Length: 625
Image 1 (cartoon, helix red, strand yellow):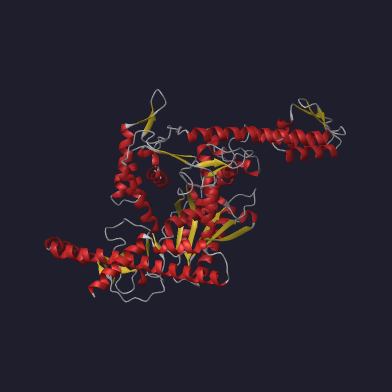
Image 2 (cartoon, one colour; image 1 turned 45 degrees about the vertical axis):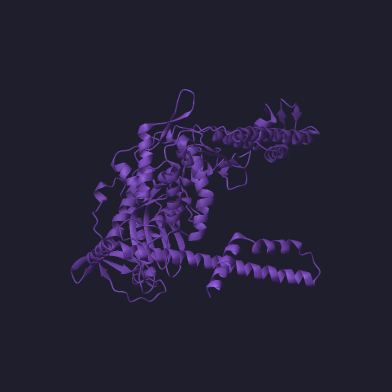
């Protein structure tokens, strides 16, 4: 169902802005006037929601009196949708005793799409499968679930909410479109969906949010607010109209200024010229003085089109070289319009905005104090603090970028992205394919370097999370002071906080995860009342503070044990490497092969500082014995 507030890069419009990234910012300048079809769809969704809630035994208010488009057909479609969802639920109960159902669930996929959010019509989670169901009221276009970007965005948002709680490995997406007798389902693994999000969705969303990329005309233009004034669509339609007119015999000749104006590359140019030539219609290029109906016309066209394409490539290469030279000189150009904490002076240099800088410092401080990005964002919204773009809504992706931005310590990493194709001008993240340049001390810092490095370490720690005894990784949580630190002594799993209703008595308890979900581990650990847990922890802290000598002695023993264990691991790895090199040396010597390189490696391993320290320790041990 459409969300009550539409994001710039909404899931419902994702098919358009994924194909034509600049259209998102262009449509932003147009008023959203709505349509009768949209109003009818909103009424249909409201009726579906009511019927489904009622079927599930939830509280629901009859909406028919407030529905302007309500009729018998809408009633039948909503009833059919409800029956369909209930059938899915019954199927889920065959393998899962307690499937989870959510209706009109708001989801946030801003980890990949800036300010990306939406509302999923129905979500069902059962037996490792996340199912996203979407009701389509339209009768004009047949909608397929196959690699549907809208449903994929909803699924990503749902995974953000529930992947930590449920062991999800498969995502199933379903379109229910009753007025077209269409039920379409598509399944994908969670890993493949994440890969698409990282490699395709996120880079294109970044282009669309910035208003970059190329306009591209296609079937997605039908729902674009700017379609009547879009130059790219007009040019594409004009060319198609000309081809249609040529087919109808209404055009005798096409006259164009130059080859570069006719098509963007050699293949397109030749394709249309041959198509027109088959209709016995010549194309005259004024600048190059070429008529395609001449005997040598196509040869000249091929040469000239290739030159035009080469010229475009050369120009793109010159621009790249100019940028590379600037990067090598350490010259930094930073857009400060949406850069929280900085502005520019009269000379164009970055200077600190004191008020915004306090917001940046607050974000770094609260993150190191243990708050999650969600809670930091909620606090900033509660206090009415605006984002760098002047918006009131803070997203976790915005917080994440601020925490990772090296510019807040006065440095700048240049060429984070690069253009892959001079024709399509597609920009992608630079993962090492082209050089990057790091400029230190370019401008005044807001965050001290040691604080920034602490934040980077904390980001890594939270991303890695905790690995349970069964190998499952669990993400960071700051919902409670005991989160992720109460570990089961029997199976090694974490304890989870629960609101318990035991025979009418409500309480808050902590229980081993192995007793709450299938982890493959058998556990008999007792459930602990939170009040008892608090009392025990307070007593332990008081005991530790009251007798520091024994606590410090035990701490020193623990530190020494960890250091010895790490050193033992390093020594074992050196022994294994020496043994492997010795065996390889013997084999090459027996087969009369060149073994100088292996001998050098063996000598280097024997004389390494780690190995020398090992033999010194061994010598001291022998003397003591």
